[in-house]
Image 1 (cartoon, rainbow, N blue to C red):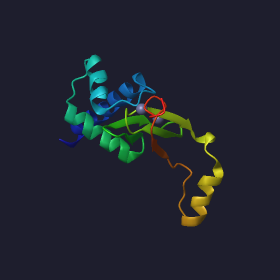
Image 2: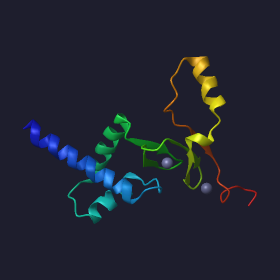
Image 3: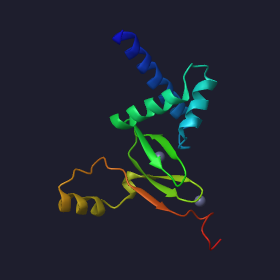
Image 4: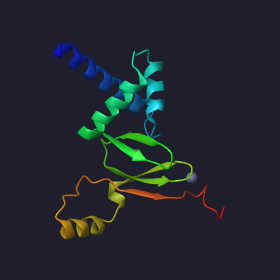
Length: 133
Ligand SMILES: [Zn+2]
Ligand SMILES: [Zn+2]
């Protein structure tokens, strides 16, 4: 009984990967990913989508981005960081090369952490939600 389950898990992971590819750059929620999978007529339940996403986050294939009111998901295949608006939930990608290496090496030498694949999330307020607008 172990083998069929393993195969099913693999195809569920593939379906989630495909959906994340379809929605690339939009940092979808689990229910948006669920919708994109159902559009492809792949039989899957929302609970399974959540469980599969959890496993993929644990493996490092997917990043979970916590916004003010939701958890959003993103592929990790290119190294990047996130700016997150805590009011509307907008997520902006920042290429890892745009973050000063001084910042990373400072924390590495202070703590002994290897931060070469670290992801930074900067929470704030986007231009649209800023009270000065
Ligand atoms: Zn905003
Ligand atoms: Zn991203």
